[in-house]
Length: 474
Image (cartoon, rainbow, N blue to C red; front, side):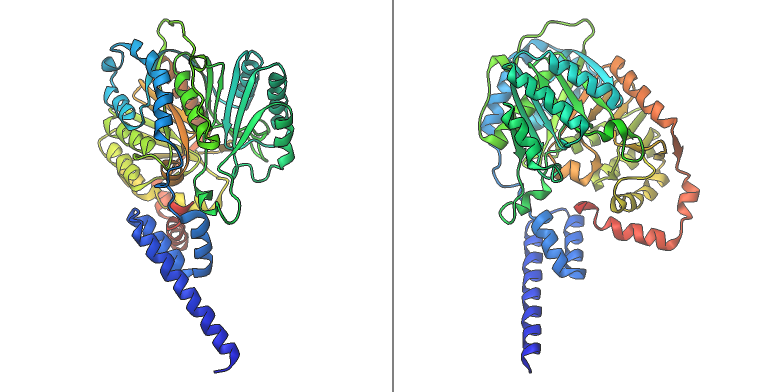
């Protein structure tokens, strides 16, 4: 055997050892069977690429101690002192069991006496955010997945720098992966202007490559502990001008005690990033009572948690719904438990509607999502395709007495890998506003015809099924 053949054999054996070793790691982590099979198929058919994908996206780091639960307990107790004033509000709610579920999972406390404003696009959200920032006297806390270096990003950055120069403490977190395209000088300018700004879990080769899969997708802003924002919009001009087509998204402005929940979420993330525990009554100021104020619960989920909080919440809502459940999501790659709940809900006679973009911003996600629709249609779930642009909104409305809005999509990544946050609101007045947003969007949709969808070409169905294999990895 000549030298070239020996070299080829050695390379082949190294590849086999690496693939087998990686496969053993995947099997030993005892993941969900579909995720295990997805990785084994990737390693089998594209071994070299598969190994690199696993290094960056597949390693399960959820069991590592990234966050001190003791710090979370301390932060939660700050808001707990105000929570005891709520009395028996929860017990009278039709969704009392859901509220207790969220409390038991990660001490997500429900607060009454809130005013909630629904902001249905960037033209409503960003001016409202800037007005609230301008009034800040003590602190501004902002966490966002994307903070673009564009005209709007520069406007927000200037506003934050101006407040820092006035003596307001400004803390900002951005996701390192979400802002990969943003040059460091954009953030250095804010830092030099007095803004305390930190990237969330920076990804630098090779030490942190395995953490690229676990990202902070939350979009929260808290001002003086009294006003808060939560929803689906990042800091980027596309939410105003679009990227060749209009972008539709939803955010909430919250005033009242529910801001305690937003504050706790931010301060927990800040500890996660800086190992600095910030607590004190000044971050949880006293609130006045409001007549007929909304009951709001801020629920977070992350890959370090023991329970998949948001996924379990969605399942509970679907299984206890009596009349309807309306959902908007830009990415539809539901986990098997959520798929089962959607089908069960529809088969029980509940009006289940899912609104998603006709054309997404990821071809792989677009094709994979179509493979989940067949069984849903057979069970009676109705799908509507948004045609006015790209609908990035993440909201849910149920039975005229519950709605939710936040950062979580109906997909594997949001339910299992990302740091997410949603507000759940138990108030008919606010629910009616969110329901109106849904029907406004519905007027720009075409309902997916089950019969025509079933008749799409065989090769198209096959390609969708192949893409579905990658859905846990997308």
